[in-house]
Image (cartoon, rainbow, N blue to C red; front, side, top):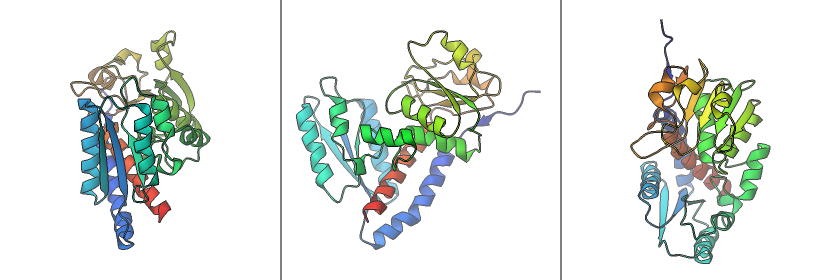
Amino acid sequence: MTAEKLILDGNRVAEEIKDRLKERIARLSDQGIVPCLATILVGDDPSSETYVRMKGNACKRLGMESIRIDLPESISTEELVAEIDKLNADPGVHGILLQHPVPSHIDERAAFEAIHIDKDLDGVTTLGFARNAFGFADYPSCTPAAILAILDYYRIPIEGKHAVVIGRSPILGKPVSLMLLNRNATVTTCHSRTVQLEEAVRLGDIVVAAVGKPKFVRGDWIKPGAVVIDAGYNTGNVGDVDYDECLQHASAITPVPAGVGPVTIATLLKHTVDAAEKRA
């Protein structure tokens, strides 16, 4: 008889996070403060536009304010930094999110670094990343924080487990590796130069896929009973793991959609409220 699989429902986790925010938002409102997130979108990438719209709608539903800054694809790095500086100086803006990726001619790192640390709600600055690495960030990277929130919600042990992270981006793979390490997991970070990747993944009690390639992780890569967290989202509503294949081997798995994505947005809202309370 096949053991029952645990589907890690991100919508359920996200709703609990947002329910906890409602009272906090109401208390801020009594003080005349509305948590405000400013989102910057450069160019007209349809996926990025969808993400920005979803974040704005999520703010609105909770009674928060969302400012959307749409900038042309032709904008220079200097002009983008100037826009960020305006938001840094606005006391009514509690958080700034620069939607990734930006057009290739822009120095994305320079743009990220322009965000004031008190408004860096996604841990994209060097200082934000460093604080996260040492385990005392006010606003750790949202998707990594969402992954840990899912594991905690479902009471999946982290300490002592071998976690394998596939991907090393500065806003997902690297920070989630560090956050798992800070929770006493043994962590292997794999990437495009990893030799015998499949064998490395098979060692994981927890596997986090963050490569941006549809159905990249196959079922026979998964150790029987492992927990699979799919942090990818690709065209066609598919993640970075082959869900049907991996489901046969895993004890628990996140679906795509309705897995990590909704919790990432809820985490961003939480960080915005955190920042508003800190400012208050």
